[in-house]
Length: 108
Image (tube, rainbow, N blue to C red; front, side, top):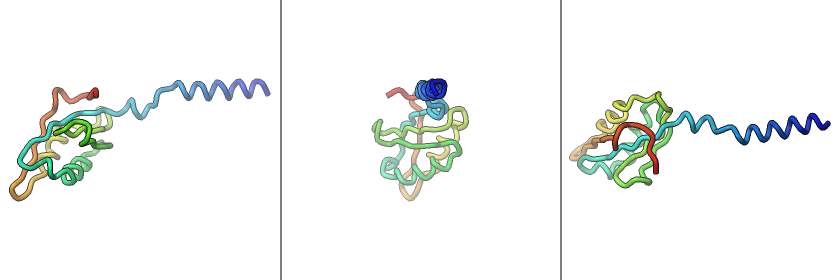
């Protein structure tokens, strides 16, 4: 019985100390948004960026005038993200995106 409790305790402690592997496999990039009236078309930007394979989540709130893209690390071509933003355009408006520095982790 003691061995069983010891093994269970070891398992629980070991599980708690192992870092979350899903977080380690994610990458965040910040893209500064520009273009005529682009900031008013967040829904269209969301739809376009979520179509890019490997994009997990989007955050338009943390950095004003930017979108933070959460994606699978090493699985998304940065040019595909910028292309998805450029595809958002309509009558009298268009969107462009520029990386804030090199595509990589965003610290905030």
